[in-house]
Amino acid sequence: MGDFDILIHLEKIKFAYPGGRAVLDNLDFEMKPGDRIGITGPNGTGKTTLFHLIVGLLSPLAGTVQVFGKARVVEDDFFDVRRRIGFLFQNADDQLFSPTVAEDVAFGPFNLGKTRHEVEHLVRSTLETLSIEHLEHRITHKLSGGEKRLVSLATVLSMQPEVLLLDEPTTGLAAETEKRIVDFLLGSGLSYIVISHDLDFLNNVTDKLITLKNGKFESL
Ligand SMILES: Nc1ncnc2c1ncn2[C@@H]1O[C@H](COP(=O)(O)OP(=O)(O)O)[C@@H](O)[C@H]1O
Ligand SMILES: [Mg+2]
Image (tube, rainbow, N blue to C red):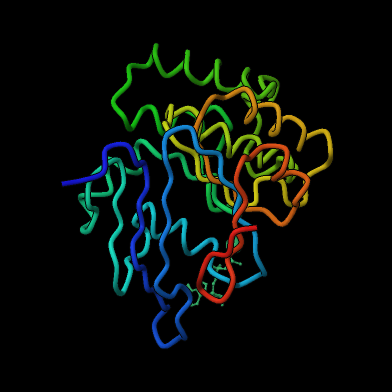
């Protein structure tokens, strides 16, 4: 049995890296359709770890992870989760691996079994959404930091996710690039969770702000 009106439900999550202290300790979290949640908190407090637990890149030591109304335990459970949740990594270099921008943005949809025609359309429309059509044929590793961020977001969006997890999407970006991300988020109609240290940014794009501290959430 699952909670069908809850997108993400974490209960009593405990997590520690091997040999380390507890990063998350008895943590509860809930995300409903339409939620736009901001997560902030000191460096090293487990914010990125939390995202990795939601998409199954890490497993909790104790507690349960439910996504889209189903308990997610083993690797197979997370295929569907990773298809429907778009995860923007904290570091764009972890996200981009193809020689060109077009290939990177096409990779996800190709993997989902879309036709060449559908993929070409998706690549073009995704780049247009972020106003980066001009980057389509560029060599990925030669892009600037801000361009890499936008292309990373494009690789996530081309999979047409239902929910976004964005890990420090605007850190280190020029105001103009940040504005594109803000405009996209506000116009997207998507449910999302954003990790950031920038409270102005979070106030702008989210409705609910929580702080992760000492392994637990505190409401702001
Ligand atoms: N792969 C890892 N192995 C061991 N410790 C890690 C690893 N990744 C992160 N940590 C540690 O876990 C804690 C939480 O990290 P992280 O989730 O990245 O924090 P945040 O995103 O809030 O800055 C930190 O103390 C960090 O050093
Ligand atoms: Mg982090």
